Length: 140
Image (cartoon, rainbow, N blue to C red; front, side, top):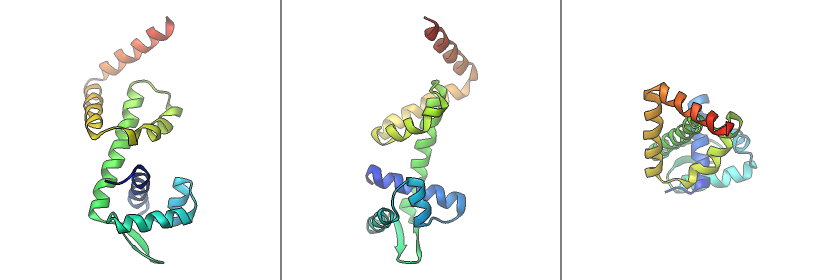
């Protein structure tokens, strides 16, 4: 299993490859707000652990394993954003909150949060009722 830091890199590589069709060290460094030398070190580690294939001066691509993990990590991130939005977290806090919690939840917890998100999405009246409850509590 990748470490939380490795997960951040895999998730960003996956996102870059989906949006641009490629991922470069410079774009990854910018997205993760780290130095390019740190990216290169992590790319080498991810290559060694078979999450991506890296050729010096030629670039890198995710392996099938890296692609599968990247997809799951993006799913987890988007699910947690949906969850926080549904429960009424202020939009300006959602991204940072997800970044703070996503590595600390088991996949079992993610699955249960997924069930809850689906429960609310099945019937928008449930979301409305939750928002009404929040407003009532804030007024007290």
